Image 1 (tube, rainbow, N blue to C red):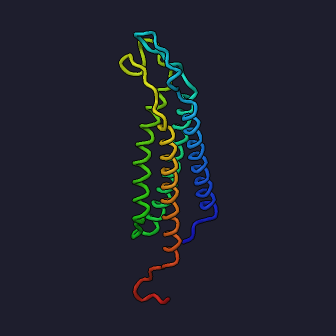
Image 2 (cartoon, helix red, strand yellow; image 1 turned 90 degrees about the vertical axis):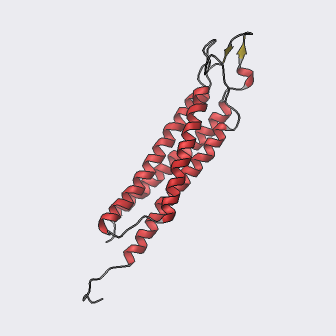
Image 3 (cartoon, rainbow, N blue to C red; image 1 turned 30 degrees about the horizontal axis):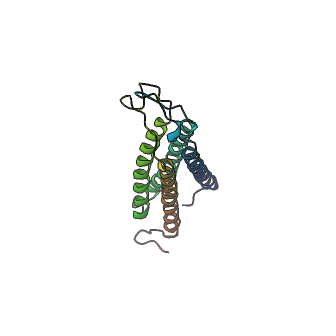
Length: 185
């Protein structure tokens, strides 16, 4: 049973969208690293601290949105491929490599989201006496956004790898046909 050209086009189009969103998220993470608050932005009046809002706050939110959309779109494609093939072939099982890549993608996604949310919120304005936590000001350590950018690449790569591994097995399965007893080949 061959999939229609329309299905192939939509899968390829969705993969391109997912890759593009992942790339945009990567670029936004790098830009956030460059624009984050530095130590010389900190104001101290002897008792209380103040940090102005930086551009990394908006860039971080945009990176979060792009990463979330890339992960959701990529997983929708993967599960659509897997589930639709499962209906056609009851013996279909998702390849082990696809499962491993999917696990890697979700674990990396969880870590990247935590890093991005924390680092982004630290780049919001921290007024005198309020700070980021318990009235104290915090500055994002250098490399936090860059680490998130690397995780974005891992996430997108593993999702796309998982999708491609299921597409490859579907093409292999199409070559094999199961015949009932007594059927001639």
